[in-house]
Image (cartoon, rainbow, N blue to C red):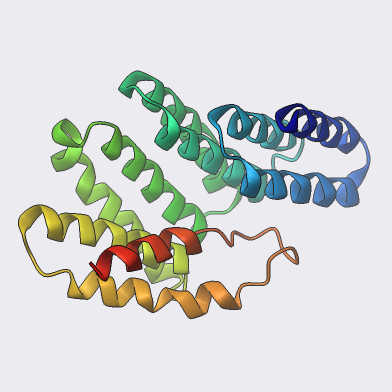
Length: 214
């Protein structure tokens, strides 16, 4: 029943956007963001992705719809079971990342999302893709932080990548653990609901901090 209500709400948001301008756009985006935060299953996340796709098709000049469509598909990749399905989702995500790049060149959030998509591709088959994709992941998180050194998503994702590599090579994890702990004040300072800018990532940071404590 919850899934049915979610689908109906997202469809209504998509239809009501047509021809109603900026106010309808903001309202549809906010509904999508709420649904994205609540989506648990692959099916629920697909419904959210489809909603952002519809908005993105109508408001091509704004980077936010492309960004959240891509983020939804990246999330789906992590939830999927087999490599082929995971790859189909990251491929779909890349389509929207490219659109977000065109709408907002040199945007720290978009660059970090590109790194996150590479990270999802790597995670799908780490044994065969680590050597090729690890440098790309690290490069994009580093570039995102050069654009905006205070971007907590780029910091947390870079820390997560460094933590995984340190564990793999048996190296100390002090540096990535210190980095991720510094992101919490930035996550807490974000004003959710007042902007369409990304605010996600705190749960990911907290999960990594918990691993640092083990």
